[in-house]
Length: 498
Image (cartoon, rainbow, N blue to C red; front, top):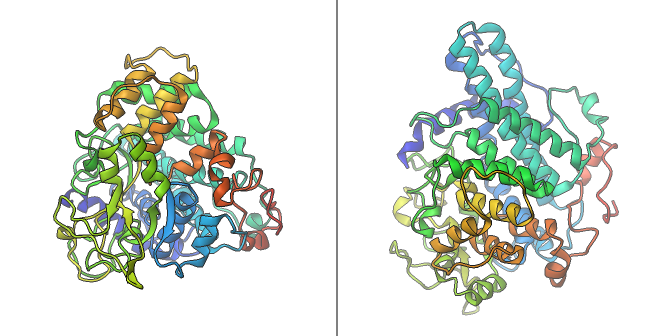
C-alpha cells in the first residue's frame, strides 16, 4: 500500500493546483498557468492531473457502477429498495435522457478528455522551452501517457453513446456549441492513433516511486480491447500476443489476490486507477470512492458503504452451474459470513430481513486497512480496469475468430483460455466462442464488462429482455438533455424521444 504514496502525493497536489481547470465544464478552456516549462521536473505535472481526473467521487462512483454494471444481468441495484430511484431506472431500462447517472458519465469521461488534452497541449510548451535530450524524450513519453488516458475516455464514450464530439484541443465556447459528432468508426480510428503513438514512445516500466503509471503495455492492452470491440481480430491478437510474449505479466496464483490491496499494481495489473487514504483519517486525500459505494449498506463500521451494485441471483446460479467455487467465493461478499481476513459481514435489516444478501466481493477491503471510523471503507482499493486474465481471454477470442498472426508467445486459443481456467481450479476445455464468452463472464464478473459483452456479441436483447432491454434502443445510452441544450448539433440516440 505504501508503494503508492509518491505517485499519489504528486497527483493529489497537482489536482489541487489545477482545481479551477478540472472543476469547470469538461470541454472548457485551458487555464493560464504559472508553470515553468523550462524545468524537466515539471513535465509530469499535467499528466498527473489527468490521472487525478480518473478518480471517482461519491456521486460519480454511484453513477459509474450504475451505468457500467447494474444494467447487466449479473448485477442488481442493491442498497435500500427506496434508495437511488434513478439507479433503479437503469436496472429496469426505464431511464431517459434526463437520468442524472447517464449525464454524470458523459461529464466524467469528458473531464478525463479535458485533463488529457491539457496535458498533451502542455507538452508543446515544454518542448519549446527544454533543450536537453533527456528532457525532450520525457516530454514525448508524457505526451504518449496522456494519450493513453484520453483513449481510455473516448473508448468508454463511444461504447456508451456511439457518436459523440471529438474534442482533441482547447476550443472556445462558441466552437464547442457548434461542434458536430464523429461517427463511432472515426472515434475508434482516433483511439487507435492515440494508442499507436503511445506504444511507440511510452516506456515499458517506471521506477518504484511511480507504481501504476501507464506504460506501453497499458496502451497495448487497451488497444487489444478496443480491437476486440471493432472485431479487428488480427490487431486484438497481435497486441495480446505481444503482451503474453513479453513475459512481464502473469496470473497471480490465487484468484482472490487479484482484487486485494496487497497485490495492487502487481504482475496481473495492466491498468488501474490509484486510490489511497495515505493512512490519514480525514479529507482531502487522493481517494477513489469506487469500492466505498459498493460496501455493505448498514454494515458495521468501517465495513460500511452505500451498498450499490450487488451480485444477482442469475450470476450466482451461473457460477454454481459451472462448479466455479473459487471465483464465486471471491466475487460474492456474503452477509452473515466471516471473510478469510476475519471480518463478519453485516447489513441493514428491514422488517426482520437483511436488505441485501450479497455485496461485490471484488472490492472487499479488510477492516484492518481502514484508519477511519466513518466512511472509510475501500478508500485504499484501486479500480482494476484491465487485468492480464482479460488479455489472455481477448487473445483466445481473437484466435477463435480466425485471427491470422505469427504468434510470438506460441499460445493457441486453448492455451490462453485454459490458463485462466486452471487458476480457477477448472478442467481444460475447447476454445469455442461460447466457452470463451462464458469464461469472460465468470472471470470478469462485476468488473464492468458484462453489459458491453452482451451488446457487442449480439446477445443483449435475448439475455436482458426480461429486465426491460429493447433491441435497437438500449444498446447505447441517450445523449443527456443538458448536453443537447448546450450543443444543438448533438443528435439524440435512436430510440429516445427527447
